[in-house]
Image 1: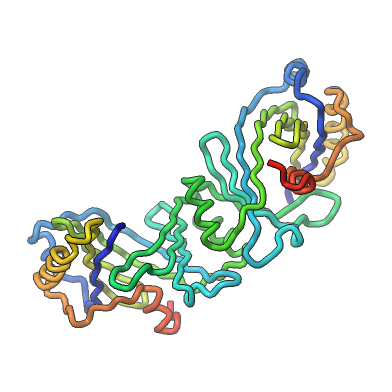
Image 2: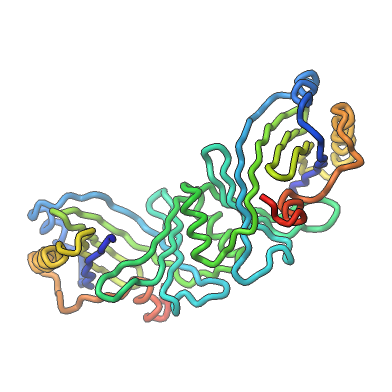
Length: 181
Length: 181
């Protein structure tokens, strides 16, 4: 079972973080322009069932992703199915013709760093601001405590305001703000 | 507006047709193993609304296709949206997780020929038998009569039993047979 540990922290600005990360030996893996389109189901309230259907365009590539409800509460573990698709416009039209409705369009710039066994995402989300996500993946339950410690340690070395950490997704934050794009 | 003219004729066997086609100068464009999976919508009866959602695997490639209701009655014109997807298994799981249900799996071998401006499909559909489809595409309404004449002429030269022609799709024929796979 894949366990995803993550902290997401809103920050005033991403400035300075790139150089702090390079001092810590972090490697830039990618620099992405992402557009995420979230859909509502024609006859099932995906917010209520804790599911999500998303079309994501990352630079040139397009992905269609289903996320199932969180399993358990301690970890953020979900059933996920994903395929790459050949056209952003066509998959959106196809979903709309089947009765799926766009509920949110989120545009972000994401820089992805790797440092030791952690991933760091520097995200700027249009209309929501800047965020840093630190993430660790493991399949071993006994590694959890060690990785959680590493995660917090890195957040502290980057001077991130840990007390502001949120467990909400960008979609939830967007909808809370009343869907201002 | 794209107009599709077609005749579909059940035949006892496809034997002999390949050589007849090559005598007429037909060119073999492709030889395909197709698997078509048709889905029912979670809250809309696609048979009633005259729509279809299909995942097709052709040799290695996978397509997700939505077909809208026929527009008008004289021609077989439909709204169609199609994307190529990266995985047959994942797109099927993804659709099932969204509540779509498989209603039919049709396996066929299709040989595609081109002769003058016509396409000829030699289809062998598992459980349904063999069929020849002759098809012409045009965007010009005034070409319709000419192309229809060409289509019938070719069918006659191939000794196809025109009186058995059917306007039904393989999905309709499959469901009429009670979904025997």
